[in-house]
Image 1 (cartoon, protein in one colour):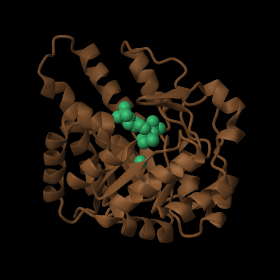
Image 2 (image 1 turned 135 degrees about the vertical axis):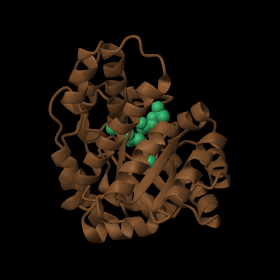
Image 3 (image 1 turned 180 degrees about the vertical axis):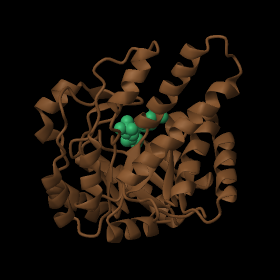
Image 4 (image 1 turned 45 degrees about the vertical axis):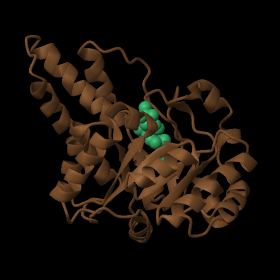
Length: 316
Ligand code: G3H
Ligand code: 13P
Ligand code: NA
Ligand code: ZN
């Protein structure tokens, strides 16, 4: 059923697994994700960015998600706003039936982030909706936000990571339900110039200053080399793409108790690699179902791989 992320995070923390939060923009992506979670009996979060709302029109996206929930009534599913930037957007999403929202004030000063987030919490909690907020700076790109260059981010990483004492103040003053932390992950396909090392000690420190607060990791795609190779082999051009090694994500959820893991880029790569392959192998093909169906299957395979990495298979 459609539900809040709260009971999911309680189970995740207890059970040493992470709940996958996958971005959806259309029917095939949604179906691909749901199919994987149904097969693996895994709880899931479908998350929708401002860009997704604009691209698909929320009425259509909501109808697709409602259909998925009806199709798999036993599956625990949350609908979450990814990177909300205003209280008005939070209100719209509550009206649209979201069970969770993110208000991302991480690019503001601590004081401004606190006041924006506290306002969002007031509005959301009054409607029984939980709130994720963010503190610290991730590398990479986000829509409408100028991101940091990978090399520049790596060089200055310490000053971008979430400060555990700030997190304590932030948590106490806002009453948030979960916190997205900067611990060395990054958005997009070009995260790093050399192998990433997550700051596991930071996770431990934040857990100490914010006991009981579920932590969220954004920018958790691994950008698997075999998919980049396929894309490049079939006419794409993605040099120097690099992500977070999957064993480090697995460690963050199993050993350090991270509850929610955001993955979008790897699903995009799976879909794009497959569609490129179909086009390269059969240039005469023009029935969209002939490339979207294999693309959807590729998303299902990618999500199944992630559910095992997160140890969430069998936890629904
Ligand atoms: O963190 C951002 C997500 O990957 C969503 O991306 O804003 O392009 O929809 P988007
Ligand atoms: P990736 O770009 O690593 O998939 O991160 C997605 C994300 O954080 C969505 O909020
Ligand atoms: Na989010
Ligand atoms: Zn994100």
